[in-house]
Amino acid sequence: MCSFIMTTKEFLFEDKDFNRLSKKRGPDFTKSCKINKFNIIHNLLDISRQQIIQPNIQEDVILLFNGEIYQPKHANVDTLSIIPLYKEHGVSFVEHINGEYAIALLDEKINCLFLYSDVFATKPLFYSVEEEHLGIASYSSELVKLGFTKINQVPASTVVSIDLKTLKIKQNQHSKFSLKEFKTSYDDCIEAFTNAMLIRCNDKISVGLSSGHDSGAILQWCLDNKPKAN
Image 1 (cartoon, rainbow, N blue to C red):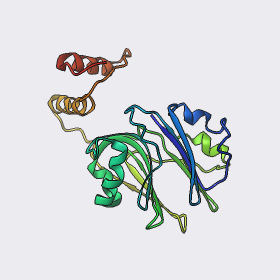
Image 2: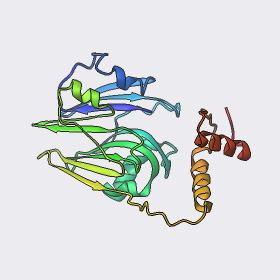
Image 3: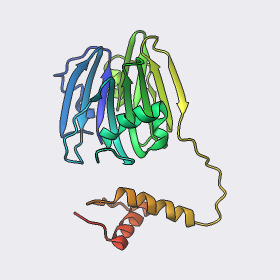
Image 4: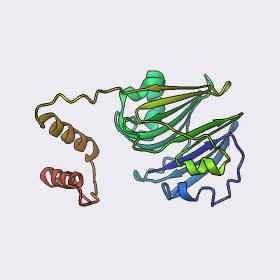
């Protein structure tokens, strides 16, 4: 987990209480900065141990990212994969990735901010546009502290685009899929589970157990396939 806050409103970066809840999602490193009219805080949970500090800026694109991209990866670091994919495929680049994510991507060339959630919205992402101000945060409570009252969560499998000149909002679905039931066996389910494990457990791993069937299945797969373990 990581977390971030991005807003056109002013606040005190040194106000630790303001970032208290968000920092719990990213206790390893916090960066505060101002880029153009945006005040930004990013809290890093450094699972990769590569200290990839955000926001990530490449030319005229600014990125804040929480989650993990499993496929594809550039330079073996998922955070550094996103902007190249955006430059290659455009706004619909998420159609070409497999991962769990909340993404805020600002393209200064076209003066537009894009907010993305994955197909199940596994990572929280909230936004608010009120009068001339804009706020984006991993927790809605941070937007409340900033004085926003009309707060929306980015829905699952959705890209929200905000024109920074007009503050007009558009919302579109990405990665569309059907929930219609037509399978007659568990074969495809087992294959999908195996594929999901292979892309997630290709390095040293640890498994946190609960009493649910899902964690039991994950542990059993790890034991059967003997991946590297911590």
